[in-house]
Amino acid sequence: MAKYLTIITYSLCALLFLVGCKGGAEDFFEGRPSEMSLVHNRIIEGSQDSMIELLKVPSRFPDATDDNISDWQNSIVAWWQVPEKRNLMITSYKKLTRNEVSQLNNWFETRNSSMSDIKIKTLRETKDSIDQIH
Image (cartoon, rainbow, N blue to C red; front, side):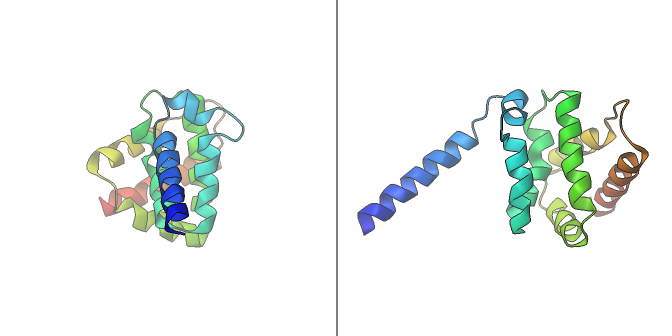
């Protein structure tokens, strides 16, 4: 039994290592399913770690394209509109470093020509909440 637990533990560690080694933004945002969509879906479980992972995406991928940033913003907007997840997001902000918050702010400010007014409003509201915490 201990042998199997050891094998499972090593396998999980290797998997976590490989997931954390994504080369760049394109690797993270592309594919079916993409790592970005997997991060988004893990928030359904409700853990703070999954929300923190979503909030750290901007600091992990400085090479992200505007389309990548827009995909991430869609996830933020979706979760912000769910009251229970909004509270989870607010408490998760407190776990970020100043650099992570700075990168987050940059991604909140990124706009593209097709962005809807509701998305802009929601991103501003979310950013204002960050500014009150940090």
